[in-house]
Amino acid sequence: MSYKVNRPLQMKLLEVVEMIDKMCQAHGLRYYLADGSLLGAVRHKGFIPWDDDMDIAMPRSDYEQLILHSKEWLPDGYEFVCFENDNSYPLHFGKIQDINTTVIEKSYRQYLAGVYVDVFPIDGAPEGKFAQKCYNRKFRKLKKRLYFITRDPYKHGHGPRSWIPLLIKKIYSLKSTQEKIKRVMTKYPFESSRMVVVNHNDGLGGMVDREKVLGYPTPIAFEGKKLMGMKDNDAYLTSLFGDYMTPPPEDKIHTHNYFYLDLEHSYKDYDESKVNRTWND
View: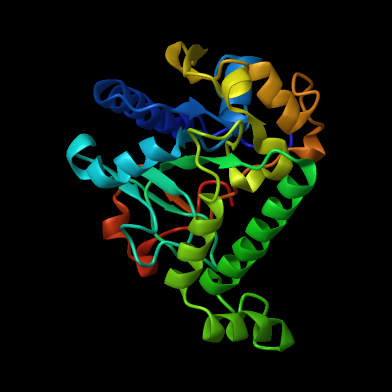
């Protein structure tokens, strides 16, 4: 086996998503397991054995309600972070995280966070294949700009490979880039679009029929708990992964390989000079 299973991390993630489920039920928010988390629910009735994160998606209107009310709706020890409430946040989607833990995904992107569940806003999408390709191409171009703005420009040293990130940082601001990405993502309203994008990172594979595939959140078993899937999980997973019931070969298995992970201490108390290397180095 070429991967390591961090079961304590998976159980911590399960705690977070159970809390999210309860919050959504209490306040009438729609959410769906997405990407590998929905795949795990269907194929494994829980986590994919090597998985080390969780993904959910929410219709844009519900996502915006979460932004507005997260501080009052989330219990103590949890927070929702996104670019709308954190000027240094490096991504175009949000995370609900456990404040009493610490995660650094990459050494060259030193954004401190707690163990988190990714929260993707679901937006409308154009219907024609050509229009979908143009929409996706524009999003990916802006996402690449965002990556260079938030990345350490000297990741590959101080030579020519640092010039493009440095130039982009000089020309574009983080705030203006985030706002432009959001304008692109929200061009097609969720409620009036036949097609929707569950996770913009997934490109064309993440575009599905809103009523036939997404539907209203539907209960699905996950690690013995009841979470929310889609109306037609098979159609979504097939669009995204193809033959999703066949596990990938070991050399194709992806894990985050976190630079630093601590399940016992808050990221707010992180001191780089006093920590050891991550669990899976």
